[in-house]
Length: 217
Image (cartoon, rainbow, N blue to C red):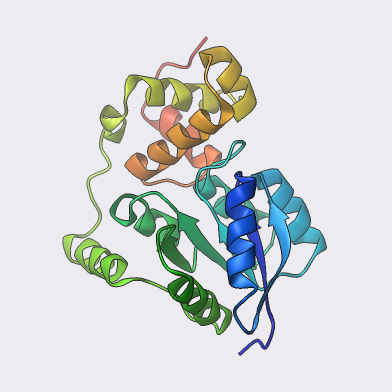
């Protein structure tokens, strides 16, 4: 068990980061030496500093949390991730865990539960609430869902975002073309990943090619 668990908080709201840091540092055995507002900032800090836990929000301005999990893996960063999100467990928890997260906890959880999840993951275990455990059980029982034409479940705007991504555009570029915010693009991307059951831009591009979807001009 790690005596002094070093946590980096990744959230694009300064007040949330400050409040969470203050709460966690009151708990024995946990310190918060790092904060990041964007996925890119996290990747830079995680490469240059040693943290024991990444506490990651899913909805950031530049990248979705699921995309960040993929980037961490490809960058060789093995720091365990606890997803800390306002998104419902039933919609995102299994996706996050399949993408590499070691746990998923809702932002409405109390300080004791959050600290317990952090300590459990720091000890080399996973953290899953009763809800997530039941979702996992149901998923294993039902088996893998049919992947045919999953993009039909996408909204028109989600479909547009998917096609723009397949052309290699960044979230910022997509936001400019669709006249929406970067955070909205990130939210759409999280929904696309969840609906299609994939976790990276590369996989999304392969999906578009495989299904012969017309690229955006």
